[in-house]
Amino acid sequence: MNNPAFLESWKKGITLADADTLFYGTGQHMNMESHINKLQPKVANIHKSIKNYPKSKAVWLAVMVGFFNPEEGDKLAKKVGAVGIGNLVLTLDNEHRHAFNNLVNHYQGW
Picture 1 (cartoon, one colour):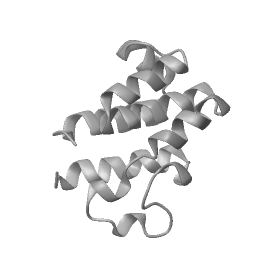
Picture 2 (tube, rainbow, N blue to C red):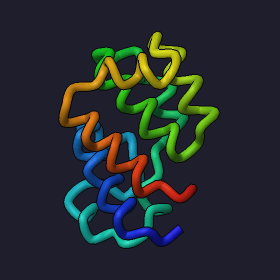
Picture 3 (cartoon, rainbow, N blue to C red):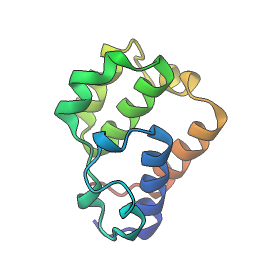
């Protein structure tokens, strides 16, 4: 998928996650990445560490994984007690809700 609007929204989502080690291609060169596949979430690492984060951050990681792999995102959301879209959104602050909205608006599949 080459969707510049989604790519920019995804980069914002990674920044909000504040967990560069849980995504490939992040760090100081992230903004130069031009393909979404180079910024995939490290799903196995997120599964291992998600319970160590505050609920709001854990939910955001589940949301991000959900765009990459809906089944894994669902498992993570359940793991942190956020089942259903309403429950996910209620856990997010306004900045994360805005980022979620942008991701949804520009998503065309992974």
